[in-house]
Image (cartoon, rainbow, N blue to C red):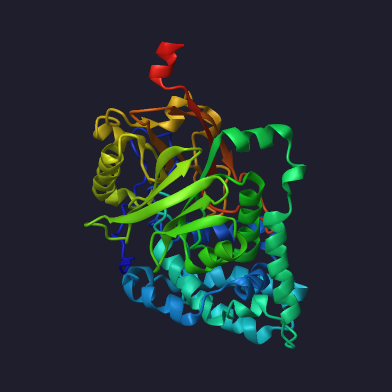
Length: 456
């Protein structure tokens, strides 16, 4: 594994992309840095409903498996510009957390813990977006790392203790287990069972692991979705060691492949009873400034060889050229994969439509799965601030950041997409969505080869 650099170039305050829907941005503001803070102070609904954010973070930390040493090194790469935020922004974010702490009965006995967490929050700047993308990743990573200093070892979850916290940690672990395993196979409909037996199902999701708010509830919601669909292949982006170890501890029925061990990274999960894992490799992007790479897995599904890829392409409008360089590299690896393999790529591409047009469209032999399905409007926008208010951005911005590409095998049965649905659209009890991105649930089916069609 290689060290991840998380320093990011500054982005243009103008975040209207040609070729994309109107985003209603206000370029007369002082910049995007304080956008979230201003929105937060104007949202009374958030102040009332997110009453237990801090206590949930405490519970989440009890369920995490990351020690201080595991997350301390990446912080050395965080850009100084993300640390030097205005005092006003820090104060406004702390105001909401302090109010939630004072309202929640569960947190009143822990005043000293509250003070520690408030100090941690003061070290973390308000979350903002670059072209409403993932510019906050490095800043949020620092927040997660700061809070990890209060994170107990994973043994606290699994090992009974005479400590008074043992009951809480065991209950929290059970709650996560129940979220994933709560819906048994016998409770699934006949159609779902049929789909699982004859179709290849795939989930692609940027889970926003860098957001330190409501970690436990969001992890529980994520596990509930992953347990409900039991996809054959799961492609995740923006994982952090905390979320990675929680998923790996619960989802014992999956093979886990990790894009990196530091900072935030991607992951491929393969369902053991349906997908046979063969080998994997990581392709480095030589000019990335955000530690991005391409994770590749070779596997077999029902006797069909697969090459599965995921990546989190460079974020921010200002990084367009680097993002396109990475996209070209992805396409190159897709085209050069063994010809008898079906190649599926899924990830957070951060692409704007005009950028793909700048490259004169997709290469021959590679297709956009959403376009193959007729460009269904209901699954177009995977990053939609008109509905998803996790970032509390006042402007309505809708972009198709998350995409799936397909290269069919030159020989044998051809894989074709059958359906695509966005998931994670429901708010959790904590008044948050699981992520600031919607997840993609896609179903594929192998059809007859061209030779078989001619014979028939």
